[in-house]
Image 1 (cartoon, rainbow, N blue to C red):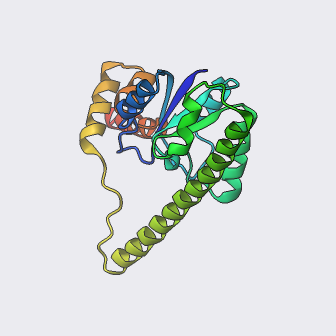
Image 2: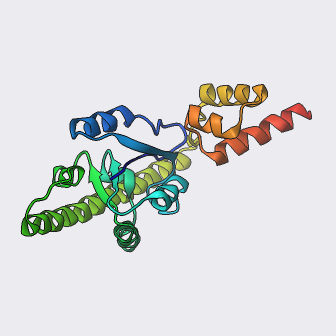
Image 3: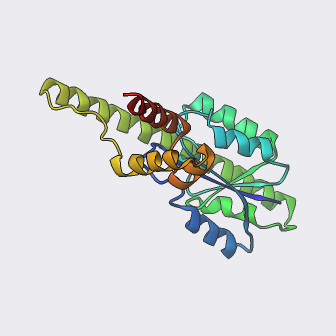
Length: 209
């Protein structure tokens, strides 16, 4: 059994690796260690995430997909969540979330009776679906409130868009100037490849002015 830690943040200016120590400590308390990490800045409302896809490709029967909370894994609509769940189950992966105690038994390799194991699986499956539904509702509610706020700000001529993370972006440009590889920059800063591409293009434009 391999423990595969999945870390996600929604936007480029958030630290996707924030919960890494907490997840590693939890695994240690269960007598396990995280064998590999998958970290990305991407929306949980899409199942097409590069690191999540890599995790699923790497996974073997009986491995554990370990997350801080279900909303780090999914804020998907119901049909997309069911499709992702089916894909995870087809790979033989077991989902464990720190905020879902019923899932923690999957971290222990025990030889309990079959009835108890099946009951725990059924309860955990129900709880996973409930928390995924709550995560999606929270996502939809926040998007609606955000849209309402933007509309109100535009009506009052006060909307300025999302502020740029100037300090982080300046450091990324310095790393590009230094010749660091894109993979090392992404690993060090947590930025997405699209953000890195945009900053590199801006940097190249300035160099030709």
